[in-house]
Length: 358
Image (cartoon, rainbow, N blue to C red; front, side, top):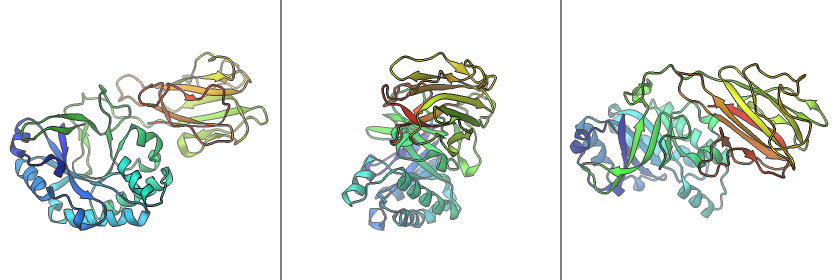
């Protein structure tokens, strides 16, 4: 399914022409901020036109929240704006927090981090959901990796923005792929592909996606070795980290509940060791049954191998340099954006690793 997202910036739209050109849905801005004066001045005309043309409709609100209470106020404003059109909104109400949101927060003396940004997103989404609407979160690769604690948002559909690529870097139901010329509109219009129909909380495969087996939930169990402690206990997904702060990692072992992982480690001052895979789990009694050779590690690399016929899933992982904060998240061995294909920095030993598959 294909659709567009619009705001007052796009001016007049001939919605019948949009529908006739083969677009199936519209995501319309309600406004921005927390005051009714910030309602999008074209909202009424856009939602009425899209409905009359027979498009599926969702909405988004651009957030300038700087606190949890602010996010709740924004959500309540959205509920006020959309109340007359409740029966028309079959797609989610999306929370949209971006770079200008951060700029505004810092201008007001608040330097937001992933905890606060995710707390605000959850507050908005939960308030919308409690009123009986679907709720979803808009993000891009940077915010996915560095600003949102995505594991906490997993219950809400993700609208993912990534331009100039053949497919999105992460699994998502809705992908904003860039701007294009759309009949009935002026200039380039943000355009999207939905891989599932998000209508009324009952996702069904879109005709744009070949019939495939459903995504299988994958659990990752991993553990690390340190010189001081030997092998530490297993940890699960992003529920915890493997390692002890200040204890440098010398080995890494992984097993998965489905599919398998290929992974390797880079030894401080030397080179990458051989690849290991998890098809047979791991064997701590065999030097070839895990990644490492007893020397300190400064980087790790991994990618998840999805079984044939299933929607592709990715390894998500990050490491912490010794006694410091985590580096940004790495996805598989990708080199898109700020990703280097591995997690870590050569020359800096690591003391903690987190990993999941999504």
